[in-house]
Image (cartoon, rainbow, N blue to C red; front, side, top):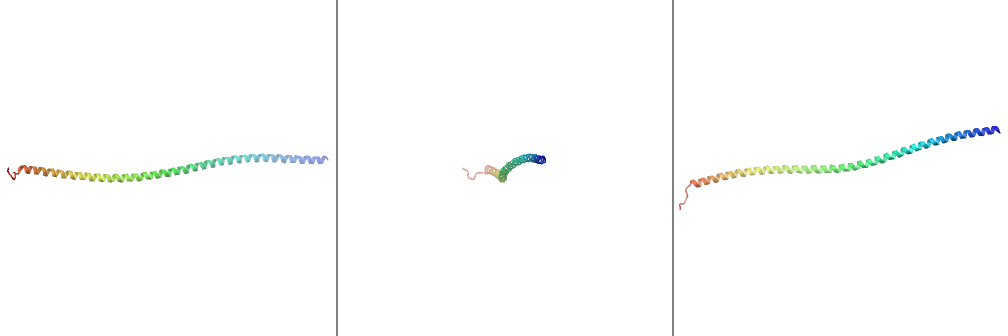
Length: 129
C-alpha cells in the first residue's frame, strides 16, 4: 500500500509538474498572442495611414492635373496675346509709314500751293477790268 501510495504521489507530482509546465506554456502563449494582437493592431494602423496617404496622393495628383490644365490654358492665352501684339506692332509700323508718306505728300502739296501763289502773284491777270 505504501508503494502504491508512493506511486500515486509520484504520478501526482509528475502531473503537477506537467500542469505547471502547461500553465507556463499557456502563459507564454497568451503573452505571444497579446504581442501578436498588438503587432496586428499596429499594422492595421499603418495600413489605415497608408490608405489615407494614397487618398491624399490621388487628391494631389488630381489637383496637379487641374493646375497643369490651367497652365496650358494660360500658355495658349499668352501665345495668342503675343501673336496679337506682333500683329498690332506690324499695323502700328504700317500706320506710321502711311502717316510719314501722307506728311511727305502734304509737304509737296504745300510746296506746290506756294508755287501757285507765287506764280499767281508774278503773272499778270489775263483780263483787265
